[in-house]
Length: 443
Image 1 (tube, rainbow, N blue to C red):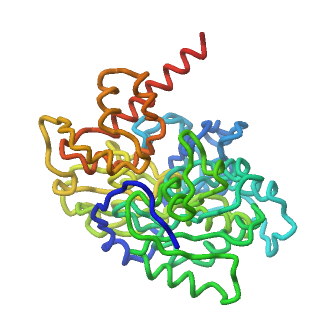
Image 2 (image 1 turned 90 degrees about the vertical axis):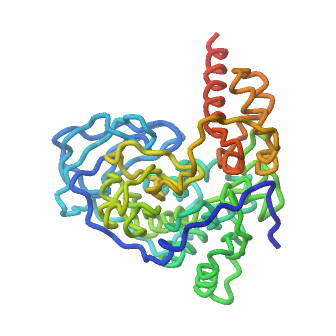
Image 3 (image 1 turned 30 degrees about the vertical axis):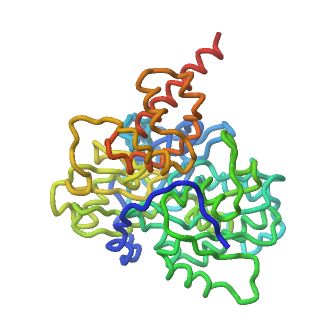
């Protein structure tokens, strides 16, 4: 029976509008802007130049670093530029810009398999790397690297179907529409780690997805266990999901493999199935387009490199001027200032939020020492003290409070009556700590 994790909050779900919409595929973009940085780890170097013709699925960027993943052309056409372009992170990133010829000329015949029983874990990890697969729940950590780091350590695999953040329904629709691929990917992870079974964990606000996946499983198949979790944010954060499903707690500074666990998103599992069995690299992404400023919330399967502006056009544009555009959910997403920024591998949602969704403006922000942020923190940290020391610039005390364990879920900021910019403060503090450590290491 699933347990529960520490802290957490219950924000309004705001999923109903897009949850009803089946995934649809709009026209591919005339110009695809494909950044060479869209995953955790080393940035890729471009393998093509201006004037080159590229085919759909061709590798156009790669790196020799162990934590990285190749990047593929999401359309066929001619490279018109290799230059810095706007990125969802807010910076400008070296990108390969492709003029789409709308022919989708493939890079070659896919390596199709009907049986993977003779493949070793390392061979499967190589296939996953070649396909450019990263964590598709938003973390974007290269999947092959996560697999390799857990070999010989992992005794529990959890497929994460929580999708706990408000508005986002792309994973939910994937469970309903691509369930066979999800289950196939789960079986691949089971094979990689040599386990008797894997667990798919889904929040109970997606009861129809739970029922659907159970119907797809043969009655005699005990290799996959599907469990229902109580709806609570941030259930989908991997450390919290591990605690809920297994009762194990990842230690401060630790990784899931340290407690014998590996967590993979449902969309990642489906992408792994497509890569291993069908030879399909990661060139498309399902994205929820939502928010009360959007004319018609939808779930779209779009090419990586599609500008955000085209996603909004595909759902009828804005019915009112949005106050804020956010890539991701409202709790952890990144505010956008340029709609020419493209969909990247970690994009699962783009929101156009109106005034009432953004909340009231506050001229003076102050901590009232209520302690609600401490109660809400799923990592059992002390947000109010971390904020105070970051504001003072006391990095030593900030480090003692384990600020690097903050998962930036936003629970503290959501619950704070003083409307403090807590998560932003912790991000800044972590960056300052990293810079301090780098300087000390260079001495």
